[in-house]
Length: 295
Image (cartoon, rainbow, N blue to C red; front, side, top):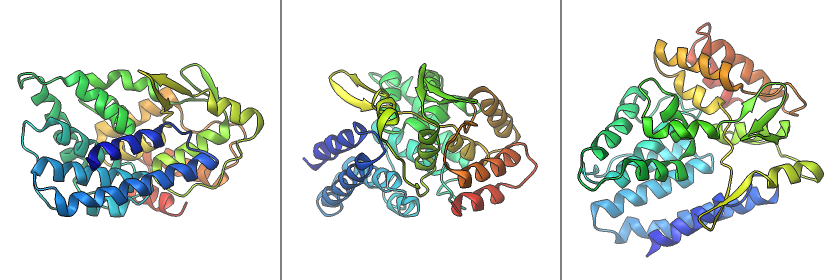
Protein backbone atom coordinates (compact mmCIF):
# COMPACT_ATOMS: atom_id res chain seq x y z
CA UNK A 1 0.00 0.00 0.00
CA UNK A 2 1.32 3.42 -0.93
CA UNK A 3 0.06 4.83 2.40
CA UNK A 4 2.50 2.69 4.36
CA UNK A 5 5.36 3.68 2.10
CA UNK A 6 4.49 7.36 2.57
CA UNK A 7 4.49 6.91 6.34
CA UNK A 8 7.91 5.24 6.24
CA UNK A 9 9.29 8.04 4.08
CA UNK A 10 7.88 10.72 6.39
CA UNK A 11 9.51 8.93 9.32
CA UNK A 12 12.82 8.75 7.44
CA UNK A 13 12.69 12.51 6.86
CA UNK A 14 11.94 13.20 10.54
CA UNK A 15 14.94 11.11 11.65
CA UNK A 16 17.37 13.52 9.97
CA UNK A 17 18.49 16.83 11.48
CA UNK A 18 17.15 19.61 9.24
CA UNK A 19 20.55 21.14 8.48
CA UNK A 20 23.50 20.72 6.15
CA UNK A 21 23.44 17.83 3.68
CA UNK A 22 20.59 16.21 5.62
CA UNK A 23 18.32 19.09 4.63
CA UNK A 24 18.75 18.17 0.97
CA UNK A 25 18.10 14.52 1.83
CA UNK A 26 14.88 15.48 3.59
CA UNK A 27 13.73 17.40 0.53
CA UNK A 28 14.45 14.43 -1.71
CA UNK A 29 12.44 12.15 0.57
CA UNK A 30 9.50 14.56 0.57
CA UNK A 31 9.58 14.65 -3.23
CA UNK A 32 9.37 10.85 -3.17
CA UNK A 33 6.32 11.10 -0.92
CA UNK A 34 4.64 13.38 -3.45
CA UNK A 35 5.45 11.01 -6.28
CA UNK A 36 3.97 7.92 -4.66
CA UNK A 37 0.97 9.79 -3.25
CA UNK A 38 -0.20 10.64 -6.75
CA UNK A 39 -1.44 7.05 -6.87
CA UNK A 40 -4.26 8.05 -4.54
CA UNK A 41 -5.64 10.61 -6.98
CA UNK A 42 -6.63 8.00 -9.57
CA UNK A 43 -6.80 4.73 -7.63
CA UNK A 44 -8.29 5.35 -4.18
CA UNK A 45 -12.07 5.19 -4.23
CA UNK A 46 -12.90 5.35 -0.52
CA UNK A 47 -13.40 8.74 1.10
CA UNK A 48 -11.02 7.97 3.95
CA UNK A 49 -8.20 7.04 1.58
CA UNK A 50 -8.75 10.17 -0.52
CA UNK A 51 -8.67 12.35 2.58
CA UNK A 52 -5.45 10.72 3.73
CA UNK A 53 -3.95 11.36 0.30
CA UNK A 54 -4.85 15.03 0.54
CA UNK A 55 -3.18 15.24 3.94
CA UNK A 56 -0.03 13.47 2.73
CA UNK A 57 0.39 15.82 -0.21
CA UNK A 58 -0.54 18.89 1.84
CA UNK A 59 1.96 18.04 4.58
CA UNK A 60 4.75 17.32 2.10
CA UNK A 61 4.10 20.61 0.31
CA UNK A 62 4.08 22.50 3.60
CA UNK A 63 7.39 21.00 4.73
CA UNK A 64 8.88 21.94 1.36
CA UNK A 65 7.83 25.53 1.92
CA UNK A 66 5.20 25.34 -0.81
CA UNK A 67 2.40 26.51 1.46
CA UNK A 68 0.34 28.02 -1.38
CA UNK A 69 0.26 24.66 -3.16
CA UNK A 70 -0.55 22.98 0.18
CA UNK A 71 -3.73 25.06 0.32
CA UNK A 72 -4.65 23.86 -3.17
CA UNK A 73 -4.06 20.24 -2.16
CA UNK A 74 -6.65 20.64 0.60
CA UNK A 75 -9.25 22.49 -1.44
CA UNK A 76 -12.57 20.88 -2.32
CA UNK A 77 -13.21 17.17 -2.14
CA UNK A 78 -15.16 15.16 0.35
CA UNK A 79 -15.44 15.97 4.05
CA UNK A 80 -14.46 13.53 6.77
CA UNK A 81 -17.19 11.76 8.69
CA UNK A 82 -17.46 12.42 12.42
CA UNK A 83 -16.03 8.99 13.29
CA UNK A 84 -13.01 9.47 11.00
CA UNK A 85 -10.98 11.01 13.82
CA UNK A 86 -7.64 10.07 12.26
CA UNK A 87 -8.10 12.13 9.11
CA UNK A 88 -10.00 14.89 10.86
CA UNK A 89 -7.18 15.41 13.36
CA UNK A 90 -4.41 15.45 10.74
CA UNK A 91 -6.25 17.75 8.33
CA UNK A 92 -7.24 20.14 11.12
CA UNK A 93 -3.62 20.22 12.33
CA UNK A 94 -2.47 21.05 8.82
CA UNK A 95 -4.82 24.03 8.69
CA UNK A 96 -3.39 25.31 11.98
CA UNK A 97 0.14 25.06 10.62
CA UNK A 98 -0.86 26.91 7.46
CA UNK A 99 -1.71 29.83 9.77
CA UNK A 100 1.99 29.87 10.75
CA UNK A 101 3.12 30.77 7.21
CA UNK A 102 3.23 34.12 5.38
CA UNK A 103 -0.14 33.40 3.71
CA UNK A 104 -2.18 36.58 3.31
CA UNK A 105 -5.45 34.65 3.36
CA UNK A 106 -5.97 31.33 5.08
CA UNK A 107 -7.97 28.43 3.70
CA UNK A 108 -10.11 28.71 6.83
CA UNK A 109 -10.39 31.64 9.25
CA UNK A 110 -8.26 30.98 12.31
CA UNK A 111 -11.22 30.70 14.70
CA UNK A 112 -12.87 28.12 12.43
CA UNK A 113 -9.63 26.14 12.13
CA UNK A 114 -9.25 26.16 15.91
CA UNK A 115 -12.84 25.05 16.44
CA UNK A 116 -12.52 22.21 13.95
CA UNK A 117 -9.44 21.04 15.79
CA UNK A 118 -11.12 21.24 19.20
CA UNK A 119 -14.17 19.41 17.86
CA UNK A 120 -12.04 16.39 16.93
CA UNK A 121 -10.98 15.96 20.54
CA UNK A 122 -14.41 16.72 21.94
CA UNK A 123 -15.70 13.85 19.80
CA UNK A 124 -12.77 11.62 20.72
CA UNK A 125 -13.75 11.93 24.38
CA UNK A 126 -17.30 10.71 23.69
CA UNK A 127 -17.05 8.25 20.78
CA UNK A 128 -16.74 4.69 22.12
CA UNK A 129 -13.28 3.16 21.73
CA UNK A 130 -11.72 6.49 20.70
CA UNK A 131 -8.42 7.44 22.31
CA UNK A 132 -7.89 11.22 22.65
CA UNK A 133 -4.42 10.79 24.15
CA UNK A 134 -3.37 8.52 21.29
CA UNK A 135 -4.83 10.98 18.80
CA UNK A 136 -2.85 13.79 20.43
CA UNK A 137 0.32 11.68 20.13
CA UNK A 138 -0.42 11.20 16.42
CA UNK A 139 -0.75 14.95 15.87
CA UNK A 140 2.37 15.60 17.92
CA UNK A 141 4.32 13.15 15.77
CA UNK A 142 3.41 14.63 12.39
CA UNK A 143 2.38 18.19 13.28
CA UNK A 144 4.39 19.22 16.34
CA UNK A 145 3.89 22.94 15.68
CA UNK A 146 0.12 22.42 15.66
CA UNK A 147 0.46 20.42 18.89
CA UNK A 148 2.24 23.34 20.56
CA UNK A 149 -0.29 25.79 19.19
CA UNK A 150 -3.15 23.68 20.58
CA UNK A 151 -1.54 24.02 24.01
CA UNK A 152 -0.95 27.78 23.69
CA UNK A 153 -4.16 29.02 22.07
CA UNK A 154 -7.04 30.43 24.10
CA UNK A 155 -9.22 27.51 25.23
CA UNK A 156 -6.37 25.04 24.73
CA UNK A 157 -6.87 21.34 24.11
CA UNK A 158 -5.68 19.82 27.38
CA UNK A 159 -4.23 16.68 25.78
CA UNK A 160 -1.56 18.88 24.21
CA UNK A 161 -0.21 20.65 27.28
CA UNK A 162 2.88 18.36 27.37
CA UNK A 163 3.80 19.67 23.91
CA UNK A 164 4.93 22.94 25.49
CA UNK A 165 8.10 21.06 26.39
CA UNK A 166 9.05 21.11 22.69
CA UNK A 167 9.47 24.91 22.55
CA UNK A 168 12.95 26.40 22.50
CA UNK A 169 13.72 28.55 25.51
CA UNK A 170 15.57 31.64 24.37
CA UNK A 171 17.20 34.57 26.16
CA UNK A 172 20.88 35.43 25.75
CA UNK A 173 21.32 31.76 24.92
CA UNK A 174 18.97 29.03 23.74
CA UNK A 175 18.19 25.60 25.16
CA UNK A 176 15.84 22.72 24.46
CA UNK A 177 14.99 20.25 27.20
CA UNK A 178 18.04 21.44 29.10
CA UNK A 179 20.44 21.03 26.17
CA UNK A 180 22.27 23.97 24.63
CA UNK A 181 21.18 24.98 21.12
CA UNK A 182 23.56 27.01 18.92
CA UNK A 183 22.22 30.49 18.14
CA UNK A 184 22.54 30.03 14.33
CA UNK A 185 20.43 26.87 14.58
CA UNK A 186 17.65 28.84 16.31
CA UNK A 187 17.48 31.27 13.40
CA UNK A 188 17.63 28.41 10.88
CA UNK A 189 14.83 26.45 12.57
CA UNK A 190 12.73 29.61 12.83
CA UNK A 191 12.91 30.07 9.07
CA UNK A 192 12.04 26.41 8.52
CA UNK A 193 9.09 26.65 10.89
CA UNK A 194 7.77 29.71 9.06
CA UNK A 195 8.26 27.90 5.69
CA UNK A 196 10.45 30.70 4.33
CA UNK A 197 13.83 30.27 2.54
CA UNK A 198 16.85 29.41 4.67
CA UNK A 199 20.25 31.03 4.20
CA UNK A 200 22.51 28.06 4.88
CA UNK A 201 23.91 26.79 8.15
CA UNK A 202 27.46 25.69 8.81
CA UNK A 203 27.33 22.45 10.79
CA UNK A 204 30.99 21.74 11.35
CA UNK A 205 32.75 21.08 14.64
CA UNK A 206 30.95 21.81 17.88
CA UNK A 207 27.77 22.97 16.12
CA UNK A 208 27.43 19.58 14.43
CA UNK A 209 27.90 17.84 17.78
CA UNK A 210 25.26 19.99 19.45
CA UNK A 211 22.79 19.38 16.61
CA UNK A 212 23.34 15.61 16.75
CA UNK A 213 22.64 15.59 20.50
CA UNK A 214 19.12 16.90 19.85
CA UNK A 215 18.12 13.56 18.33
CA UNK A 216 16.69 10.68 20.29
CA UNK A 217 15.09 7.26 19.93
CA UNK A 218 11.50 6.47 20.85
CA UNK A 219 10.15 2.92 20.67
CA UNK A 220 13.05 1.92 18.45
CA UNK A 221 12.46 4.81 16.03
CA UNK A 222 15.00 7.60 15.53
CA UNK A 223 13.57 11.12 15.76
CA UNK A 224 15.35 14.45 15.56
CA UNK A 225 13.84 16.99 17.93
CA UNK A 226 11.36 18.31 17.16
CA UNK A 227 13.04 21.52 18.32
CA UNK A 228 10.43 24.23 17.88
CA UNK A 229 11.05 27.98 17.85
CA UNK A 230 8.16 30.11 19.04
CA UNK A 231 7.78 32.64 16.20
CA UNK A 232 5.64 30.43 13.90
CA UNK A 233 3.09 29.97 16.69
CA UNK A 234 3.10 33.72 17.35
CA UNK A 235 2.30 34.36 13.69
CA UNK A 236 -0.79 32.16 14.01
CA UNK A 237 -1.83 33.76 17.30
CA UNK A 238 -1.53 37.23 15.77
CA UNK A 239 -4.28 36.25 13.32
CA UNK A 240 -6.75 35.99 16.20
CA UNK A 241 -8.37 38.55 18.48
CA UNK A 242 -7.28 40.37 21.65
CA UNK A 243 -7.14 37.16 23.70
CA UNK A 244 -4.80 35.66 21.13
CA UNK A 245 -2.49 38.65 21.27
CA UNK A 246 -2.45 38.50 25.06
CA UNK A 247 -1.48 34.83 24.81
CA UNK A 248 1.22 35.69 22.26
CA UNK A 249 2.75 38.35 24.51
CA UNK A 250 2.77 35.97 27.46
CA UNK A 251 4.40 33.21 25.39
CA UNK A 252 7.05 35.62 24.08
CA UNK A 253 7.90 36.58 27.64
CA UNK A 254 7.96 32.97 28.83
CA UNK A 255 9.96 31.39 25.99
CA UNK A 256 11.68 34.11 23.94
CA UNK A 257 12.16 34.17 20.18
CA UNK A 258 15.73 34.86 19.01
CA UNK A 259 18.89 34.74 21.13
CA UNK A 260 21.00 37.86 21.45
CA UNK A 261 24.12 35.86 20.57
CA UNK A 262 25.65 35.56 17.11
CA UNK A 263 22.83 33.96 15.13
CA UNK A 264 24.22 35.14 11.77
CA UNK A 265 20.81 36.18 10.44
CA UNK A 266 20.34 39.97 10.68
CA UNK A 267 17.43 39.88 8.21
CA UNK A 268 15.49 37.56 10.52
CA UNK A 269 16.35 39.75 13.50
CA UNK A 270 14.77 42.70 11.69
CA UNK A 271 11.64 40.62 11.03
CA UNK A 272 11.48 39.61 14.69
CA UNK A 273 11.45 43.28 15.65
CA UNK A 274 8.51 43.87 13.30
CA UNK A 275 6.66 41.01 14.93
CA UNK A 276 7.46 42.31 18.40
CA UNK A 277 5.45 45.42 17.54
CA UNK A 278 2.68 43.41 15.82
CA UNK A 279 2.29 41.21 18.90
CA UNK A 280 2.17 44.35 21.05
CA UNK A 281 -0.78 45.48 18.93
CA UNK A 282 1.04 48.56 17.62
CA UNK A 283 1.30 47.46 13.97
CA UNK A 284 -1.18 45.57 11.76
CA UNK A 285 -0.82 41.89 10.96
CA UNK A 286 -0.28 42.75 7.29
CA UNK A 287 3.04 44.43 8.14
CA UNK A 288 4.29 41.28 9.81
CA UNK A 289 3.20 39.06 6.94
CA UNK A 290 4.90 41.32 4.40
CA UNK A 291 8.10 41.15 6.44
CA UNK A 292 7.95 37.33 6.29
CA UNK A 293 7.30 37.36 2.56
CA UNK A 294 10.41 39.50 2.05
CA UNK A 295 12.73 37.11 3.87
